Image 1 (cartoon, rainbow, N blue to C red):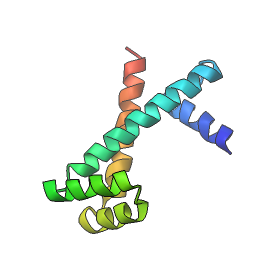
Image 2: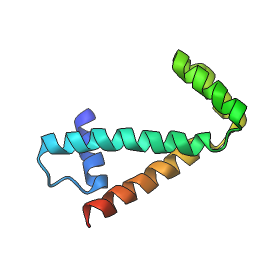
Image 3: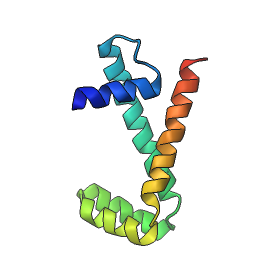
Image 4: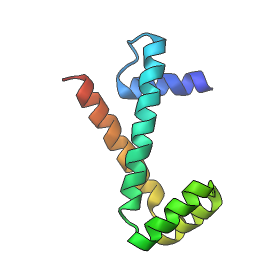
Length: 98
């Protein structure tokens, strides 16, 4: 399944013609960048005190607490994150075609 997922991601990013090792490297870099962008987009919706609470929960590794906080304070956080990742995919594709 992971191989199929990796192939799909490589296709979505427009890098499927590259060697597999290079694809994996770019996917890992993209994943980290996309996660950071998605997190920043969601955090923009939180007030400063809630951002501090988010940071404390994150540092504690409290995934359940983070989910509860986001579900309550940013009910559409999943959609915001998905939209941001889609934008990052498009940015990555346009960067590669320059």
